[in-house]
Each structure stands twice: as structure tokens, then as C-alpha cells.
Length: 231
Ligand code: PGA
Image (tube, rainbow, N blue to C red; front, top):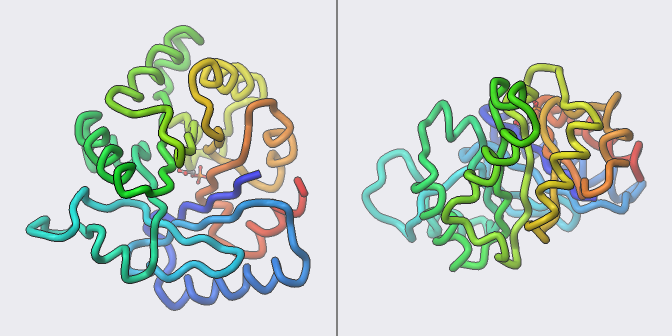
């Protein structure tokens, strides 16, 4: 399974270093059979360790240049980072990134051979309109995206499940991932209120290849325990 931790605007550089050391130590002592990656805030970007891959939550599609507040390839290369989240609902909805911009970013980082975790997910009113509406909404979020890119991972994260404590049900995850699997060959992650109580059931769902975890990943021990539960 793939275990990805999205810190969002949590943790500092020091606490991220401690987190990585703690996680690496637990993985050394008691290894798990999973691919582990974390996405700390930009100020805490660090080189990956043997067992913990570090990626960025965002970057601009440039080598460098005049993009105030952004970082590009040059800044990522300093830490050997080749993994990026694109399309998280918080960037789509709070920051206002359009599908067109996401497609440009995707194209640029794909050309630079990045591992891309591309996030999609519907708002509650779409979910309440039924599965067909959900499918249509999600496929629209692939506009301009090369779903056959060979270093792609797709994360399905219903917006109403993110940070709410209300994960999608196993049935909802099952039907949505089966729909995605019709066209997407890449690994499929589920995200949205994943925690120690639901991780086992979620990971049993067919076509779930891993999870993208926010709140429950912030404590290294908690995140590691989740990995142990499905090992
Ligand atoms: P959550 O966040 O686990 O806190 O719901 C998941 C995410 O936004 O990636």
C-alpha cells in the first residue's frame, strides 16, 4: 500500500525533522510493506530518507523566475525532491487554482519526470445528486491531464470527507474507485478522514492502493500505527 501524509500548514522544519527521524526509526525497527511519503510545508522541505520519501504540497511550473511566493524546480532540486501533490481541493477551492492551471502544472512536472499525486474529489451537493453526477464531476477534473503518465498516482478525496471526521463509506469508496479504474491504470489512493479506526476497512476495498492522510498523519506514531494495522 501507499501511505502518504499531507501535513498542510502544520509542523515546522524542526518538528518535521523529528517526525522523519522517529518514523524512520520505527520503520527500521519494525519494517512495514508499504511505500511511505510525506508532504510537509515548503519551509520544511528536506531530503528523503531511505524509508520516507519527501514531496512538496505545491510548486510553480518553472525552473525559477518572477513568481512571488512560489518555488520552482531549482528550489526543489536542492532537496532532491521529485514528488508533488497537484489538484488538492484546498488549492482548487481556497487558493483558486483552475483546471487549466492544474493541467499546466501537471504537464510541466510530468515533463520533468516527477511522481505526481493528482487529487480529485466532489463537493457534498454533487455526492447527494448520485453516483452518475459524481463520476461526471470527477472525470471533468481530469481535463487536460495525461492519465497515462507513468509516474502518476491518483488520490480520490471527497471534499466533504476532508478534515470533517466523516470518511466516505466503504461502499462509496468502492463504487467510486471502480468507476475510476475503468480508465485510470495508476494506483488509486483514498483520502478524507482516514484514521486508525477506518484504515483496515478502507484498505480492504478493491482498487484502493493506498491512502492520503491529513490530520491522522500529524503524529508520526499514529501514522505508523495505521501502517501496522494493514501490514
Ligand atoms: P484529512 O485530510 O485526513 O484531515 O481529512 C486529508 C487530505 O486533505 O489530504
